[in-house]
Length: 243
Image (cartoon, rainbow, N blue to C red; front, side, top):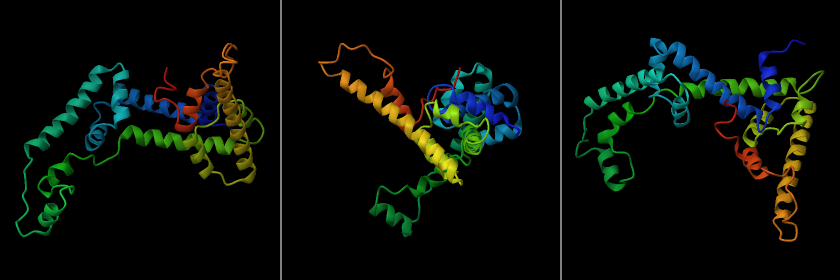
């Protein structure tokens, strides 16, 4: 059967450390930002999307700093901040009438958002999601579906998956939601369980060697198991998969 590029991306990522989907997500985010900064920074439609999103989420905004197009970052930040200044120029404190229900509710519960500032707060709130997140989630879905659809069969991904670090817990859950075939389900669960059993054994070996009776024993494959366990349960580091 013909193989897509996502198949080869997944196969290569499984041959590296930690969750393959985390690695491929990080790579997809990098590729999007590279394309944006080097090819699309002056595209009016792209700039409008970024403006409506008020830039990027925390993770991807700081990821901009890793890219080498400082002028591209400067242009984007100037555009978004300029738009925010326009909002600030028009900002008005709009006090509700004395008899309004909203004013009464606010007086009774100071935790409620103030209606007097609601308009400017709305205009300072993103109207679209971070465009990098949207692209990354699209690629995440493609890679998870590729794993499920290509796990079994001739030259499938099962063998390389079994010798990998498997998926992190969040991506393992997402993968299971896409499984419609019993054989795929059993193969995926059995492989992931074996990977986590091996990791658990390494953690317990670290604990054993912390005992004064065994603390002089040399470290083996268990080295780094605590960090691998964090990645397994919570997802890999944000910088994973980046050159």
